[in-house]
Length: 390
Image (cartoon, rainbow, N blue to C red):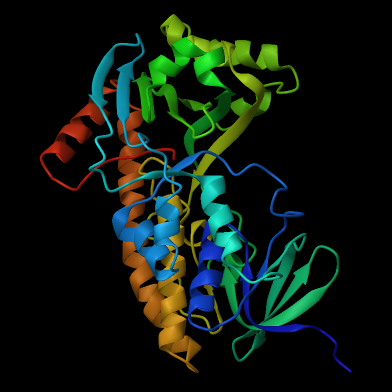
C-alpha cells in the first residue's frame, strides 16, 4: 500500500510570499501545506526594515485581511530619507511627514503577523526540499532532506533565490550583479552610538561615491542596520576572515580609505559579527512556458537586486494574486495559474528594470549625483519614489 502523504496544495518556502499565499488561500477556505527548511519560526533573524508599497504589498495585506493589523506595527518616521556624499555632506534630506504611502515595518514583525494568521500546523518546519519531480497530469513528488516524500496536485515554489522548484519550469539561474554587501549592526544606537544615530537620521540612509557606499536604516529596536556596499569582483568577500572581526573590519575599511571619519565609524563601531551578502539577480524578463500543476512566486520567480525596494512587495502581491486566482477558478487550476502568470510576468519585468536602474544610479563613478537626479525626477512625478535595500 502506498503510504506517501498527499497534499492538494503544497508551498515550498515559509518566507513572506509563501505565508501570504497560505493566508489568502485560507481566507477563501482553501488549506495549503507549507514546507520550510528552518528548524522553527525563531531559527534565525529575519533581516531589517521593509517599506510596504500601497499598490503591491499593502494591497496584498488587504487581500489577506491583515492591513489594519499591519498599520499598528509600522515604524513612525521610517519613510525619512538622507543622501550624503563620501565626505558626509548631506545633499538631500526628506523628513517623514506622514503623507507617504510606503510605511516601514520590521521584517520579523510582518512575518509574525502572517504566521499568527495561519492555522496551527500549516507550516512544516525542518522540512528542506532536496528534490522535485513531475509525475504527470500536473502532479508532483517532493523529496525532503530526511528522506521523507509527499505528492501534491499543485506545487508552488516560494523558496527564494536558489529555488528547488524553479528547474521544473526554467533553466535560468541567478547571476552575480557585481555588487557585494557586508552587513553591520550598531545596537542601542542612541545610548551607545549617538553620533552614528544622528548621522543616519530616522529612516533610510545613503552615503555614496565611486562605486561604493553605506546604505542603512534605523530599526524599531533602536539599532542601526547598515550595509557597506561595493562594486567588486565576486571572489572578494571570500577573502575576508569573518572569524576575526577586527581583521575583517580593517580589510573592509581599506576599501573606503578617504571616506569621512563619521562614515568609517559605522564599520569600526559595529557590534557583533559581519555578514557577507553577494547580490544576485535573474535575467530581466524571466518567464517560462505554462507547465501543469506548478508555478513560482517571489524571488524564485524574479530575483532582482534590492535597489528599488521591490522584492518583498512583489512576493506579497504575487502570493495574493495567486491565491485569488486559485479561489476564482475552482476546479480549474490551470486556468488559475495561467491568469496568475499573465499578471506576474509584466509586473516583475518592470520592477526588475527599475531595480537595475537603481543599481546603476547608486553604484556610479559620480555617485551620489545619479541618485539625486533620480529623486529630482520623482519630485516632478507625484507618487513616484525610490527605496532601496529595505
